[in-house]
Image (tube, rainbow, N blue to C red):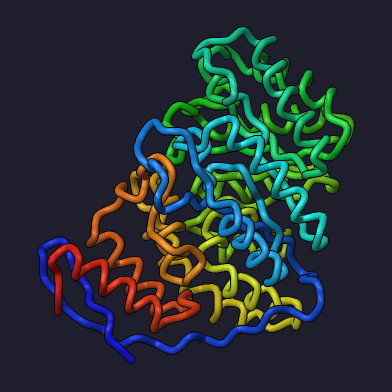
Length: 386
């Protein structure tokens, strides 16, 4: 096999051997011990105007094929969320079409699908509380009509206008009252979106979690799950232990998911992770091991992927989408390393080189020889050779 050429921040060039693909097998029956969703990205046409500020021109064949890839491994798809570049290149019209198309594809194969509901189709920067609720409900009804599950995402509009915990409770109460299907609440930390600082009325996660719990308890059972993305295992475990029995914790912690999914004697988290879009075969194989009661094998498979995820989600964390698309390209799921909004330029070659090294070591490369050819070619195009 060809070696990988690696590049560090001091411009030093080295090589490392290409490891063989781990040979994981798709499941022959549904995954049982954990529910897992991979938050999936979108793939643009390589020839499109993929520059900042331009509307998304999505390659629907490749984008939907990637979702079928995720479903084939027994995972669910979480769509139209941050990984799909909401608020970072994916415009409102493209978001609506993505939801409609993904819901139809999910129905065609019986694949699990949840999608993000937000207020980001409204151009005005400042709304009243009632207008925020109206915007949420508009997207909520579109999602329900499409037949997809609902993840109620954090709203920048609400973060701007809310002045107290009561404001959050008022808006969520009205939106949840309008829901006709079960809802998962999403608590996205400021590492992913600085505009969401102090969401749920406090910068202290303990105080904010009190508000979240009150919203859940007042929902008449409509909130059946919470996705926490604070990159803080302590906060997730604390909230997990306070949830009603009918409410599932979905970890969104791309730094600590191995232990959170494994759990402890008081419970575990299920998963809704952008990282799982990058390592879907490994995630599936690990959960298959849990299904077989083999915790050691689960750790052996999934444990090494966490270092890779930490690199993909390194600060500034909101550029993690670049790493997800990069691995999709290396693994042959898209023809070009390109992203809507020009976001493929958001990470440096040394950063991407470390992703290559860690993906190679953790078994995350599905077609290692293709990955080596593509990566070494990209480096050569930039004047870097071994």
